[in-house]
Image (cartoon, rainbow, N blue to C red; front, top):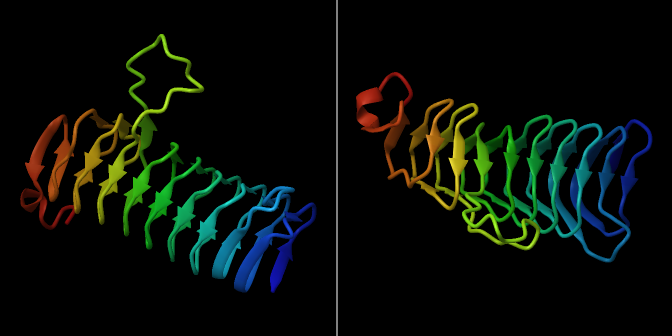
Amino acid sequence: MIKFNGLNIYISPNVKYKGTLEVGHGSAVGENDETTIEFGSDCKIGRFCSLRFGIKIGNNCQIGDYCFIGKNSIVGDGVIIETGSRIFSNVRIGSGSIINSNVSNNVIIEDNVRFFGRIGHSHRNHCLDWKTTVEPSPIFRKNCIIGINALIIGAVEIGENSYVAAGEVVRGNIPPNMVYFKGNLYDKEKFRGFIV
């Protein structure tokens, strides 16, 4: 059953869902094409959201107001996408993750990631056309935390169980079980009881 929470809601005829799908005022789910959008059971979409074609959303997901999810993105079970977040094309988000920011094209976010930072492509060759340049995107491994306004630049990998502090700028890989704080890497054990 689709529950309409307001007016001016567009639902593509190609939307497939299980259980209940709640959709907020002014939201558009899908486009006028034949591409399927799939939802698991008991998902909620906030007000003024735009969800593009070819996406798959898992069970029990919550998408806040004013969110955007780009084409061919996949979102796992129990994911929370906070108000105003933008998930661009071909993004993979693992189960249990919380996203409160913009996520660039082709980013991989594994299970139980907390992402509150920002992503910037390195765009090293300024002579190339911005619209046609394809650059590798970051990978965020399981259980990592990216603090508020941390900036992740280029095709870096944030290791499993790692923590990037708020406001940090990351230009290189972060190994598993590490804390990146004030431009330095620390063993996560040194922070036991504080962030672990």
